[in-house]
Amino acid sequence: MGGAKGEEKAGAADDWCYQFGNKSTLDLKSPKKSPLALRMVVLAITMLCGVFICSMCMKQLGRESWSKIVKIEVAEQSCNKSAVPPSEVKFVHYPRPINYSRDECTCNPVRFFAIISSQRSGSGWFETLLNSHINVSSNGEIFSTKERRSNITSIIRTLDKVYNLDWNSSASKNECTAAVGFKWMLNQGLMANHGDIVDYFNRRGVSAIFLFRRNLLRQLVSQLANNHDRYLKQLNGTHKAHVHTRHEAKILARYKPRLNTTSLIWRLKQADEYNRDALDNLKSIRHITIYYEDLIRNRTKLVDVLDFLKVPRRKLASRHVKIHTKPLSEQIENWDEVYNKLNGTHYESFLNADYRL
Image (tube, rainbow, N blue to C red):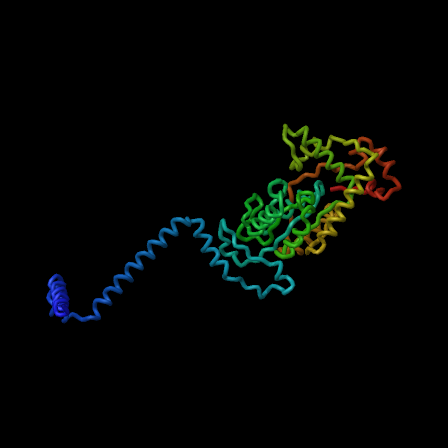
């Protein structure tokens, strides 16, 4: 039995050798060459598979996604901040936009800011002055759209887009912007989320420009006139909150609102307290406070703003034409009633505080 099995094994081996060459030929081949060749084949197959997988991944990612990956790698190359004072490092940024490259301005520092104000405080005129600076981009009243301020998540998403230089507007200077921001009204989700906004501004190094109006009576007249035109659309069927010609300004200035003297003092008090509360809630943010009347009387106040933003000083200009330029006595229909109501009160100064452009 054992001998038969041995003979069977030997015969099988002989048959195997006969199919692939005789036995002596196999014995003469180097046993080292076959494993090396096999390894080379496996390596070649692995490389081909790797190339195939990479090509498929690139197709799935697409050009835009692939560019994002490249930008992330570039973003890891930090810019030299040695020339920036330690106290200012927090407020100096080097954004890496997704939609374009800053090219030679990649390491030009950018300051983040927000103009915080209330309606009819001169913020539109002030913003056009800032945007006349070649290195400043202020992107307008972006939170006038309710969806962007519907919750804190939407607000922060919008803020990130602005400060990453990915917000597209007519004010965008793109590559060589040195200061980027926008205009934010107190009633556009700011005060409702002031705690989270303060945390965000302090964490991201955003500075605030508080712009208010001292004469709340003039502000009220401007608000009522603006609301009037919003419904009547006096300029060829179009509502304009700001105008660029004296002719348009003259048309809008014709309207003289009649003020409710019964609630006038309460209304002025509410506006005053609202502004004071805003300043108190946002005071921990790096900020500068300016008043519309001061800018009207003394344009050198704009230099303080440019210094605050750390941008070069230069002459600023605006195409805006002021609508209400006459004394309040000529702009309020029931002036005598208003005068008698406020005379001798805390708000008496509003009656006489006038200015000329």
